[in-house]
Amino acid sequence: MSEINRISSLISDCYSLVVNTALLTTHRVTLLTNTVLNTMKLKPLIFLIALFCSCSQWKYDKISGQKPVESKEEIDSVLSTLEKLRYSDLSDNYKERTGNIGVFKKMVEDGTFYRIREQDASKFIVGSIRLGNLLTHDRYHKFDLNRKSYQQIWLIDKHLLYKLLELKLELGKKGFDPDGFTVRDGHRHPAHNKLIGGASRSQHIAGKAVDIVILDINQDGKENNSDKQIVLDLLDKKVIQERGGIGRYPGTMVVHFDVRGKKARWDSY
Ligand SMILES: [Zn+2]
Figure 1: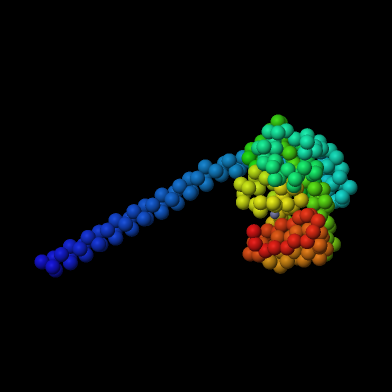
Figure 2: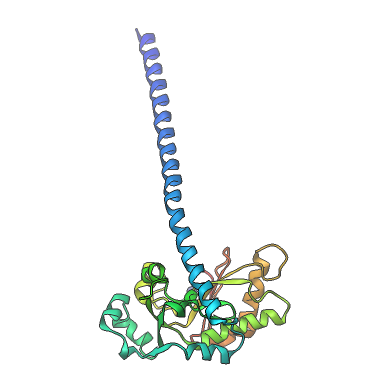
């Protein structure tokens, strides 16, 4: 009798193993299928956004004939084409929506804000970096960029733009690729900064910080730590020195620098 029990328990174990494996496999196949379907659903959207962006930039480049910005005077000249605003000019609605109130008021109230309209986002602001790259990448930025009614408020310390230019010029002087990095983040209003998990008193909130992604700076066909080290050394010894912060973020190709007016260095996010 016990032999029969053992055999029946063995059969039952085998059965559950087969059923569980089948269920797990089905679950994995469903997950994979969903991921593929979701990606396929998103692809046309991503493609359309990219197409719209490049269309408006192409249109702007063709009409304006603007060349990449290579000097501080040219940066000033682009800034002079924008509508300048003080903190007191901003609407209560904007201040509340973006969280530029309460504890953050102190961080931003002496800064220079600009009203950015559709065509402004395509303007070159430093080298071939477009102004749109340094705007808060919130939902207004992502979806309205190509609308005639597009408007966004930009807070930027022009000394940050000068430092970005200095980095490009120094790279060029040393025989490296001055365009060997992209901008990931510039200004982040407090609400967006919180949403993406930025430091609570981030210099991005005050328009004094930029995050860049390092590419093949030394043009050896690889994007690796040697490229990143070139940028970190230049920022530390030449461009920023004692006057600002540098986030090194080892293990990534991202570098943060800012113009806070005093020295700060750190590794982790
Ligand atoms: Zn940063």
